[in-house]
Image 1 (spheres, helix red, strand yellow):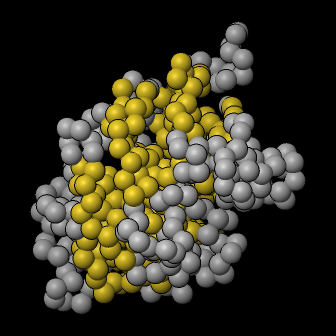
Image 2 (cartoon, rainbow, N blue to C red; image 1 turned 90 degrees about the horizontal axis):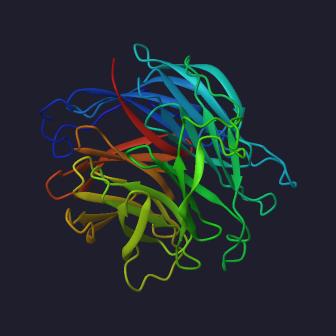
Image 3 (cartoon, one colour; image 1 turned 180 degrees about the vertical axis):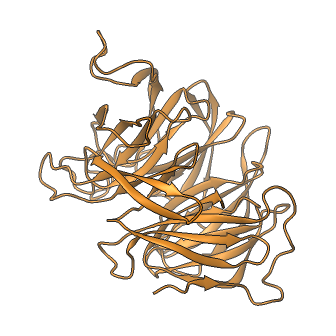
Length: 398
């Protein structure tokens, strides 16, 4: 199923030695799907060497569909979703949020506790910058009960508590079968930690909430909202049938970028104190393409100069854009094959010279050389054999 160590052959596939603080070795956590793929066991931890390209397996932790991960600010705890659909009956709640202790020396995880996600198909996790709460998006494939978002307190020992709030959105979109009800696909905190944004694929809206952790759910006049409050804006509407999926902010908090799954596009926003203003929409797909499309993951390079997305369906590409640092607008740089089927997620390593892309349906992940100056990706010979890889997270090695 997995090779313990993978390395590049000497020659063109090995990038130049990486200089600076980001060079060295890192632990890479990988989340997978397990119920639909017997090759996968759960959460995988690898040791990755930026200078040599070596990738060594450290540990495997059994878990059910840990398709998305988050890490505490002190890196001592790892949180995962357990993306379970439930029995699709009204009010059923199948998913979980789990907490693990992370031993950096051995790269191993120790189960701590889990709580109900208060919904079906939890598919995203975001830890508040202050580390006090964690939020999930319950996508819910079934129209009844539909999707929701939940926010959970984090205890001093790193365990996760029962949901402080669970919010259902009302409505639907025009795409039958995909937009019959709310389908929350991501919950993202603003970098300053003052707001939470929930992208709802089912109703074509990005909801905006004020994050106020000092408010308690049992406080007088709280109305059961826990650490969240509606903003004056409430939400921003996305063009009907677009299907908003994932949202990222630039480090300066001047712009935000949203992938829309159903039309495979990126929407660029100006951002100011909780408010989003659309300034550009760019397609992921090349003109004239006739097959199935599907916008997926989205990430900025650490220097903010380049934006990367995945386009799934029949396309199976990583799409690269250059970012105008003043206006935030995007210009296409390149489209590169993911070398597999359904590139769900990807990650740029801390050195900025590598990218790993996971192909969910072909049970593999490929490494790419990344040029920090041009943003371009070059495929390499390094392939990781892993069942349904979905999510990647780099941490400094012990």
